Structure formats: structure tokens, C-alpha cells
Image (cartoon, rainbow, N blue to C red; front, top):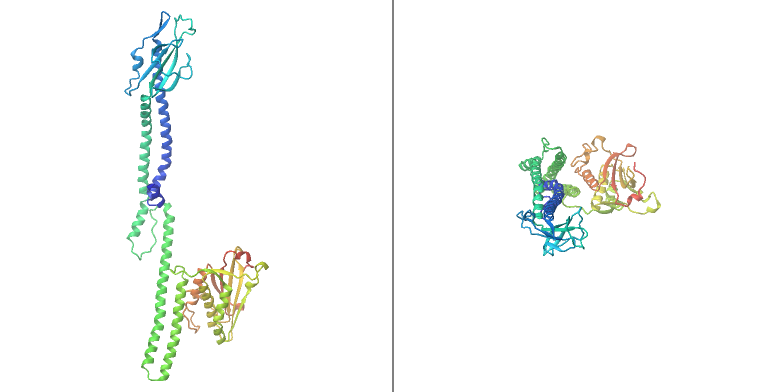
Length: 498
């Protein structure tokens, strides 16, 4: 039980391999031991039968007929051949042709089958509480005058206890299984030794990792390792690489966040000092206005940092993931930004094409995305807010939502398109703007550089993607977000999205 528990818990790979190496050999050894015992029993029985036959033949040869009656003088050699030191007891009896006792013990058992001259009968029987092995044979004798005798044959029965036979069986069996036992011990020992040498590379890896510092995430060397271990080391190196990249990203994020927070805090401190030391009321009002603006920017930066932290795939605090109606979230996000659009006289529109499904059976069904509703709303708000910020007064920002099939046509997805009439982003910088704190130079628009980074984290966390492209007619910018719909939406999918 303990061995099985250790194997299930995986405490020792070496023990596990040795057991599985020796288990088939153990089954073979058990079969060979059984065969060896059967052969030993057959051999011992054959030897016993030979002794019984010799003893009965010796007794039969001493049967004589005198004056018409049979007599038998039993020589000591007939019974002495059983004196092997095992303490066997020998009994016999001789019957004349009429069945009368000539010599021996009257109640010695007889076989159920009658022997013939050509075929003696060997039998097993219990006599006085002990198991016996016996032989019954027929011996022709000349000289009987009894009118009842028609055959002139006497019956000789000799039986002996089976102590010597069983002892011989055990001895022969032990001699047969000794090579098997030695072979099993050698196989187990050599297997253990071979596995110990074979697993030394793993021990070398363990020592290498134990000797490393906590900052050493360099790849392991596969030199000298068995080829079977290469995939494990390669996968482990891949995990180390991912951890190193994650740590590097976190360090960059902390460094950038510290830098981004340091600048507005320094400005706030300077403006506060200026307001406190100035005697001019107008200067104090100007300082307070600058403080208010700076606090607003700082609040926005902190909120975006918290949102980005929540959107991180490895964050300890998991968002409230559940099926969310993407159309309802988009409507809510746009309603909160309507005032910003009115202030800049920007035409903000929303078109929900998902209400036009391919089949009438799906009409009116919402598009559900498995993600955090709060993060999805923040993602849409960030995209629309960026479009409003960079679109000049009198411009246009359009949001369109549609249901489409994936390129493989095997699942449905929600596609959100946000287009604006702003300056756009050069094609060479469209991948860079998704990096944290990256801002396109020369736009003249203040920002934190976190909006699109947050959008990418949220989209990827929901199993989707985000991309940037030229707006319709090459004017402005178009942001395209693709999000997979929950199970069951594939039956209501529309045509593939371009």
C-alpha cells in the first residue's frame, strides 16, 4: 500500500521506473516458478513411482506356491529402499488369486481400478489419517491347486507416505527458482544502477538551478543531456524566457509609471508653493486653476494605471468575467462621452448592425462576449475618447457594431469599428502606440500614452484583438476590435468581416 501511494504521489521517479521495469519480469518469474514447481512435482512423483514399482516387484518375486498355497517371504531390501531419512511409513499386502491375504496388513487400501499384468495401477489414498501413494500390480504364479483359482495371479500392493516425495518436490523447486531469484535481484540492481546514472543529468539541472541567484533567468544548457530530456529543458527555458519578459515589462511599467507620476506631482507642488507665496489674488486664482487641471490629469493617469493593472492577464485580482452585452456597453460608453462631443461640435454616431442578423430566427438576440463588463466599457470609452481628443472641431466620430464570422467560418465574433476624421497615425507607428506611455510626437495633444495599451490588454484578455487602419477614403483613423462571442453565437453568425 505504501509503495502504491508513493508511486501515485510521484515521490521517486527512480523507484517508479524500477518498479515498472521489474514488474513484467516479476510476472514472468512467477510463471516460471509455477512451471518449475509443476516439473518438480512431476519428477518427484516419477521417482516415487519408480521406488514403489521396484519394491512391489521385489515382493512379487518372493511369492511362492507350496502345497497349493501361496507364501511370501518379504526381504528387508523390498522395504529398505524407502529409508531416505524423510521418515516415510511403508505398508503392503499380498493377495492370492482368490483375494485371501497372503502377507502384510489386511486393511491397506486398494485402488478403485483393477490392475493387469501389463499395466500396474498407481493411486492416492488415505490410510489411518495419513496420505499415501501406492501401487497395485499383478504377478503370475504357477502351482495353485485351489479349484477356485482360475488365473494363477497374485496381487501385490505397496504404499508409502508422501514425506519424501514432498521433500523432493521442494528441493527440486528451490533448485529451479534459485537462478530466477538471482536473475531478478541482478535485474533490479542493474536497473537501479542504470537509472541512477541515467537520471544524473536531472540532478545536475537541479544543482544548477539551486546554485542560481533569484535574478538569474538565463536558459539551461542541454549539453550532455539525453535527447529525451531536451524537450523538458526547452520548455523550461521557454517558461524562464516568458517570466523574464514579464518581469522586464513590469519593471518598465513601474519605471515609466514613476516617471509619469513624478512630473505632475512636481508641477502640483510648484503651483501650490506659487499660490501660497503670492500676494496677488489673480496669481492665486491662476495657481488654483492650474492645480485643478493638474489634479484632473493626475486623477486620469491614476485611473488608467488601475485599469491597466486590472486588465493584466496575470493580475492577482481577477475581473468579473461573465457574458456581457457588447451593444449595451457601447451605448452606455457613448452616452457618457456625448457631452465631450457636444463641446467640440463633433458628430458622434453609433450604428448597431448586429440587429440585422443573417437569419430571422436570431433577430433581436444580443451579442454576448465573455469578459468583464466594466473593462469592456472602459475599452470602448478609451477608443472613443481618443478619437474625440484627436478629431478637430466640426469633425465626425462614428462607432459601428456588427456580427461577423471568423475567417475560418467556424465561430462568430463581434466587430467594433471606431472611425474619426482626425490626423490619423502613420503606418510605421501603429504598432508602437499600443505600448505603454508611448505617444506620437507633434500632435499637440496631451495624454498619458496608456489608452491604447489598456485597449489591447482588455481585448487580448477577452480572447480578441485590436488593430488600426486608415479611415474610409484614407481620411482619419479606424480602430477595429474583434471579440469572440460566447458559445451558441456561432449559429447566428453573419458573413465574414472584411
